[in-house]
Amino acid sequence: MNGSVSGTQQRRRWPWPRATKRGNETETKRETQETGAVMGELTAREARALIDYNPSTGELRWKARPESMFAGKKKGCCTRWNNRYAGKIAGSAAERSNGLCYWAVRINDKLYLAHRVAWLILYGQWPSDKIDHLDGDGLNNRIDNFREATQKDNMQNQCLRQTSSTGVCGVSWRDDLGKWRAYLRKKHLGTFDTLLDAVAARRSAEKGEGFTERHGKAA
Image (spheres, rainbow, N blue to C red):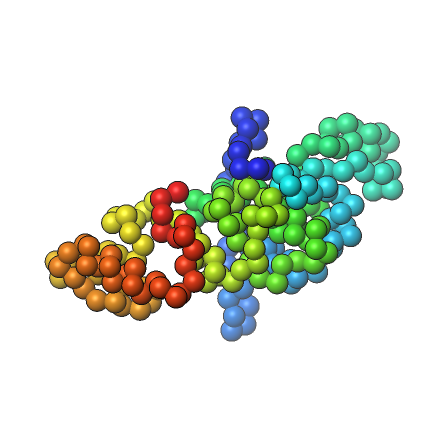
């Protein structure tokens, strides 16, 4: 949970739900799970009853459960559950389809991103938008590594994608023109004869746009 994955806690590729059409809007079940406020299922009270969150280490651990949580179950279920899980790390590393890795925990048969559950436990409410990991490590769930952020904020704190062919964010090669293209989001900044000129145009356009120091750097 503090940024490392032990040999017994291997990364899993969770089956995150795909987008579904609802009326005139495209809403993803994944976003519904992540937002929490839309779900209206897991509350801070419920989360706090099930999980201990240590803001200094970022760890989530299962709490011991009382017999009342096993009403209607076979005799001994409570004891067996507590012997197996109480005090143990909750969840595991989950690799998403985009290659990013986060800690995830299954609660009441639903999969949640651990950093959002941690926020819920600590502050008593779901984040109003996304949670950005300041150091870019989705497994580092210490509270001082969190900030509430929009999608734009989140993108401005991302490191260089491994798929980058140029090693520079916002710069690509145009075979049809035989030139380097610079761009910022959907804004075309121009085409250039040299890579250095294209990089300079991109860097100039970034000024005052809120990009963090780690943006565009190799992970």
